[in-house]
Image (cartoon, rainbow, N blue to C red; front, side, top):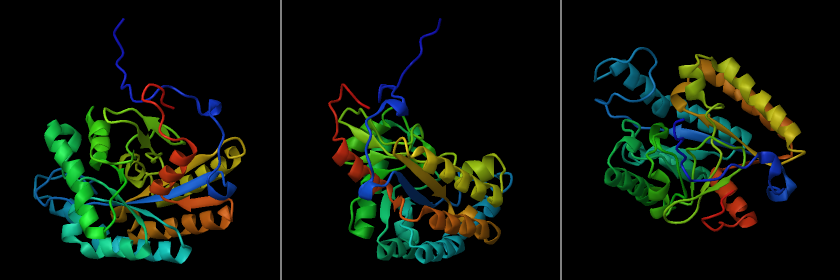
Length: 301
């Protein structure tokens, strides 16, 4: 029988066997919206594709992704303003160099900025450790320069982690990460530099895997958001949970998809009333670590 490896970052813990707690104001469901803002190299070969990838320079797919930053994100910002929803800007730090107007809109809205590596043209988890370390450190400090606030959280470009990524993140000063879509509550993880918190981030309620990989369109994605909300709201009678929604402007910012996103988020806000905490992953991290401070390295939840 072959030996099964294990990451050693956390132990198995059924969600039904954990201590109860509440989000601020006695609420039981925390919803956060992550707006992925990504930059790509013109001669790069990574990133979502509208149609078959072509040898670089892949003008069609590059320009399609660029539409999200030039057009799609601005109608999404207007919708978030209209609904009064806070969002987390998951930013490649290259956005601060090439599209500072986007960073400024997040800043004036008061949104949280989450570091998202340098660019989505590279998979940092495939690089030598020192190169990956340089990326996670540079991303944090470049976004601090651009916003005046040091990012607390990190989402790897392409969800590309190495075996050392959590160690590098904690060593660089990050308080939480979003790469592990393994739970509906925050989970403390072990690293070489002490615990780091894993905050739930969606890979199902995420437009890239749904639209690009599973070929679902916006009406189906919108229905998924509302179906998940209905189930989470029922289950909140038993335990508090986190529901994340991950969006990319080059997908849900397209005019034909945006109408469905607008309908789903508007209905979500109407149904939520005062029972739901619309928040950001950083605020979830802050609240959770107050209720459950970082444990000893030997006993993680």
